[in-house]
Image (cartoon, rainbow over all chains, first blue to last red; front, side, top):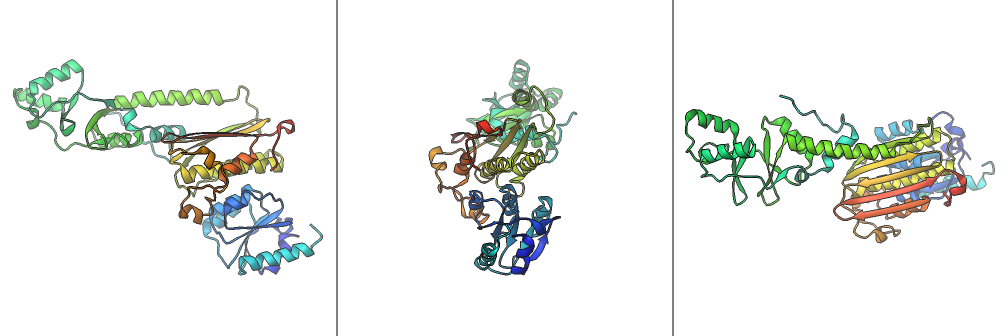
Length: 116
Length: 310
C-alpha cells in the first residue's frame, strides 16, 4: 500500500507531499492523539492517523520514523505545522473523515492489499 | 566606563546563558555586609570606608534597609566639612535592590541599567543579607566558566573523526514547546545522514525525545548533551530542578505528575522515562529534590554490544 492509493480513499488534501511521497510504503496504522502512545508503538512503515495538529505531533512522527501523517476531522494544519512538515520532509495529508472512519478506510485497504 | 556585555538568550553562547540563569545571586554576593545605622556620623563612615576598602555601605538596622551611602556622598560632605552629620541626612534613600533567589542574569542586567557600583541584596523577608558588586560577578563568572571549560575538555574526543562522531550541547527552557524536540530532531537527522541503522536511529530518537520533552514539561530548564562515537550514542540530560521526589515511581509506566495543559499537547501519559529506559542499553538516573535531575542514556551502535529491540 502506498500513500498515493490512500489519498483518494480518504478524499484527502495533501498539505505537504515531499518528492516521491506517493510511493512511500504503508503497512500499518498508528492512530492516536497521545504522542506518548505513538512513542511506544513498535511499528515500521506506518502512517500516523491523528487529530492533534501540533508541531510536536509532526516531530514525534519524524522521530519514530512514520511514513506520513493523516489529520482527521477536517483539521487544517497551522502554518507552523506545514513549515515543519516541509523541513522534516514528512508527508502531511488531511481528511474530513473522523478518526475511526479514516482508520477503517485505510485498514480495509491494507487488508485487501497484497503488494506491501 | 566599561559596560557589561548584552547577555541575551538569543545571542550568547549557551554555556554562558546556562551559567547566568542557573546561578542565584545568593551564591555570588558578599554575604553579611558591613552596614551602618542611620544615626552613624559621617566621620565613622569615612573611617569604615578607608579601613575596609569599600566605596559604599548599606544603611540598615536589624536587617531593615534604609538607604545606601557611597564614597561620592562622603566626598560632598568632606567638601562641606560636615563630618559630624548623621548618615540619614546624606544617604540615598531610594535604593535599587536585588533579591537572593534571583538569577545572576538579572543582576547583570540591573548593573547595565543603572550607573551604580553595588546593589544591596534582600532575602524573601525583605531583610538585608548581602551586597553585590561587579567584582563579585566577575569572580563568579570566571570560576563557573572555568568549571564548564574543564567539563567540555573532558568531553572532547582525543581524536577528532570527521563524519559520525559528534559532541553537542543543547539547551531547553521550561514549557518551551516551540523548540522542544529540536535537539532530538537534529541528532536523528545527523545519524540518518551518516547511514546509522534505521532501528538504532529510532531507539536514539525515542530516548532523546522522551528525555527532551520531560525536561521541557517537568523541569525549569537544562541541557541535553550528545556524544556520538562509532561505538555508541551517549545522551546526558541535566536540569536545574525541581528534581523527582520518587524516582522509582517516575520509572513506573502510567505514573505522571503532568497537568491537563501538558496532556492536551499529547504528552504526560507517564510513559516517558520507562520508554527512554526501554530503548537504552545503559540507563542511569539520579535526582535530588530542589537540585535537579541527571539522566544518562547510552545506545550501542556496534552489534555485539546491543541488547535492546527498537
